[in-house]
Length: 334
Ligand SMILES: Cc1ncc(C[n+]2csc(CCOP(=O)(O)OP(=O)(O)O)c2C)c(N)n1
Ligand SMILES: [Mg+2]
Image (cartoon, rainbow, N blue to C red; front, top):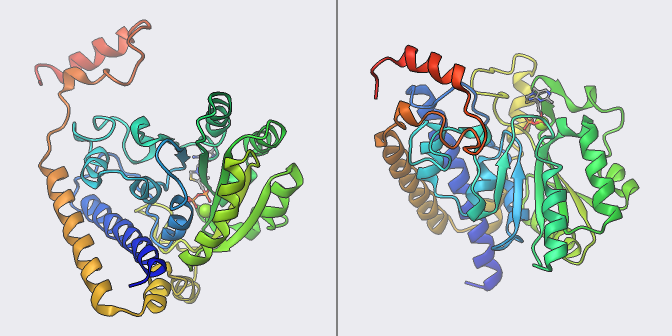
């Protein structure tokens, strides 16, 4: 096995782990084991691994509400992620953040964000820190095509270019913002051209091909480490509805069938052409995620008494009216 193949196999394994994870999240939702109702699966978007592959310890990132895959690729423990999504106390945010607010500074995750475009400006701050401390780290914001309509992106790109920050803006274009197709939201869909206009190194890569993403992302990430901020659009297709309850009535079955052929796992399988090895990787990933799901489901919820811990800044005045009200509602519950 060549080194090139080893690296490609590693990317395939990471993508498979992401897909298996997302399938388990969907299962937990059906079992009523997730806390809250909103879950956004990144199935079909696993080729983000082509970018995360160039990231290293110390690098930071933010994600949008569809960020499970990125966090997993950056080393998250799937059991703690599932526990977080299930509202359990061993979750990354002690079960109080959930899918859309998961974060872990130890792994460089500065936070998922439910506000479209909300995580983008944070990387400007992280980029300033990296530049001023000379840490050599980069910071990457992952967001969707919907965020291309948010003004904060353009402010952030301008500041990054002006101050030559080590940052990358990564737009995972899955063709939809909820039920709105990208061509109904953007007058012109040449997103890299917008970034280029601000002075960023910008490119688009085929999200059905992780190797293409990896190749294109290399120059973008290398540039960012040298103080040339970048923008990468990953052109993908959202396989499922916006969230778990969305059956995509705004898409035809024909469109979905065609879109789902743009499958980065299938492309990688064909290129690697080693069914025995890939089947073993698949089985290992499935077993790992089954164990993670069982562990998460078996974990306990945080005690009601700790409800406000980790949520409000302990040094500021406590939200007494809410505390009193909730205490009354909860009665004697632990
Ligand atoms: C500022 C803001 N406006 C509207 C919403 C409601 N909303 C949630 S997700 C979403 C679509 C986001 O689409 P995109 O950025 O392409 O991400 P995707 O869901 O496709 O991954 C919208 C409009 C929101 N969360 N924040
Ligand atoms: Mg989208």
